[in-house]
Image (tube, rainbow, N blue to C red):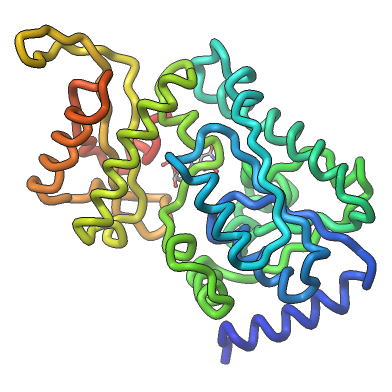
Length: 318
Ligand code: XMP
């Protein structure tokens, strides 16, 4: 029967047999479970000939880039962190339409990733954390497996650099990927992380994206997510995050009238993200988070809770 230990042993051998003794391998890391597990497997097979590239698009959660990069380095991975926040903000300037933002983020990612990949001498392979559901979806909907996830989409790099594709997780479902990650001692904070969209906070800031809005949203989001952990609720929801709405509302602070931003908290229960119910979080918890956001994040004076299910709503607001 299938065990994660068996899978690791046989996949490590298969990778060692497939990848030539001098071949270098490039992998884009996102901080998510799939790319991290793929990296650990390849690291076990070929050590530092795996070259991980972790791009900060400036749209990650608060402190996430530094802390995840640190975890990767602790695991002994050969990974390069590239802070390209400014390039992404420049590419996004003035764009309000959700698909326009996705395209700008995707295009900038490809540019940055290409530049970094071309610095790896002797690169012969591009590794990807594609898992079985991505394979099915991509065959039925979007063509070749390499194009499915926007944040894993590497444009024409394989052709340009003459790279072959290696996808060690192609046959696995998500729960199996988690079991493999556990067997490879992937830290708990990465293994049990909520899903997070490739375009990140870029699609949780409704309307155009500015560094100031990213800062506001990162601080509100950190209060919500840290709160879920403190209250023991993090692993009871499938995904959670905060949306920065393009509205201001009137409030009072002391004797002053304020006119500031509104945020919506979103938390859902789900099995696969295809359908979802809004999480029935305790009122005490919601009160705690709302007070903390309004008291600590100057510029936000109102918090609302999204009670829409998918369908007909979606998990993200854009
Ligand atoms: P929706 O909003 O469609 O989200 O109900 C379902 C799941 O997909 C994630 N999502 C994305 N992931 N690129 C991604 O990599 C995207 O453009 C994107 N849009 C939504 C969302 O976070 C949820 O987990």
